[in-house]
Amino acid sequence: SVPSGVDTLTLERLQTLRSYKAKPDWDRRLPAHVTAQGKAMCAFDPVLAQRRIDAGLPALTPNSITDPAQFRAELQTISRRGYATATGEAVPGISSVAAPVIDTRGHVVAALAINGPPEEMLPASARMGGLVQAAARRLSKDLRPQYASDR
Image 1: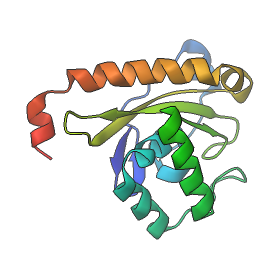
Image 2 (image 1 turned 90 degrees about the horizontal axis):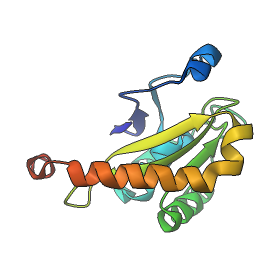
Image 3 (image 1 turned 135 degrees about the vertical axis):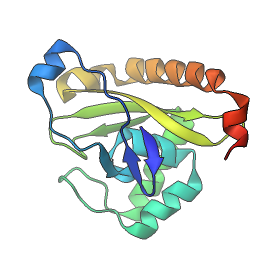
């Protein structure tokens, strides 16, 4: 996913056979505050976080964070931990773990996430957090320097 205004835009989604059968029907564009990808990007991009707060924190589900103070506290936790989680905040029955992809100049350009059912994701969130962080770091190292200078 990449930042798109105050939202996240999912550019690519790889699904397993099992997840395809479940076929969750979520949007490609969602408010940044309700997705692990968006929260991961906001935690490392204070301008994006403030823009999302200024635009409002609408509830998509009963689990969505709608309070700016709670959102800021969540972002502090994410920045310390290095990855974000979301459980049913955008889509009921879907949990996510995500880490930011940061370019060579220190700008957040994207986030990688693993999504699945809460009963599988929650017990393994720390392990999955490590996996998405490692993948995001590898992708960050592979970013071309000219991409960073184009910003």
